[in-house]
Image 1 (cartoon, rainbow, N blue to C red):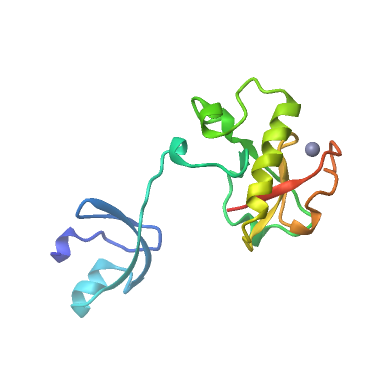
Image 2 (tube, rainbow, N blue to C red):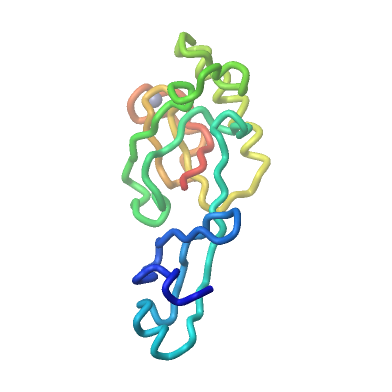
Length: 160
Ligand SMILES: [Zn+2]
């Protein structure tokens, strides 16, 4: 690739379009075009950007968090707000999610079923959530203990 086609700097997170795909720069040595051109060499570590439409995901929980790395950021006593997935999808019931008009009982029943599925997957970063109070916690030890707000049983939750 000609030097002049490269971005000015390659800070991590820079998006590049190569061929038909988009790539995120994970690491670049050096990180500036000027330096790379001086050295005549550039090492790029890239991650391919894969976009998945929400409708194509088969869900194993009814909520998600809007923040990233919650499992790294939060202490076991902290709770983070979650967002119901059925508010983001057109026909949530086709994706195995509660419909937009589901009662709390229906939401919990569906969430319980999905949680049982998720419980069969050992995911190290999983925590727990309440699909009705829309709060999550990183401590999987709380699984099936009462929600601090509504007292319903806490379910398995994937924090991202
Ligand atoms: Zn609750």
